[in-house]
Image 1 (cartoon, rainbow, N blue to C red):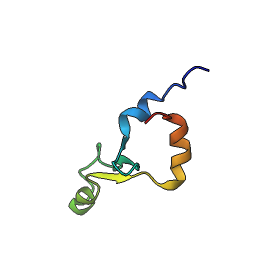
Image 2 (image 1 turned 30 degrees about the vertical axis):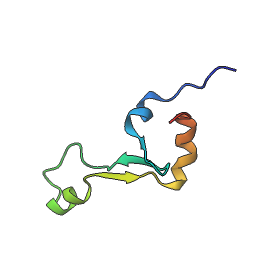
Image 3 (image 1 turned 60 degrees about the vertical axis):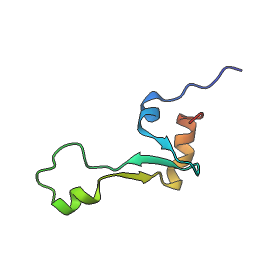
Image 4 (image 1 turned 90 degrees about the horizontal axis):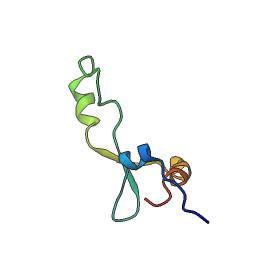
Amino acid sequence: MPKMKSHSGTKKRLKRTASGKLTRNSANQCHLMSHKTPKQNRNSRGTETVSNSDLKRIKHQVPYL
């Protein structure tokens, strides 16, 4: 049986931590920043872990990550 193909867009957006969880970048940080408050911009920096409700779908997209 051949290998499954990974979704290349998802591969570029996720990383696996040492404990096995998946991390992603925070949302709402790409553009249209001028009308957001500085507090919103500060709090949306950095990375977050992927929620448990999304893990089944993501593991199907990226089986070897």
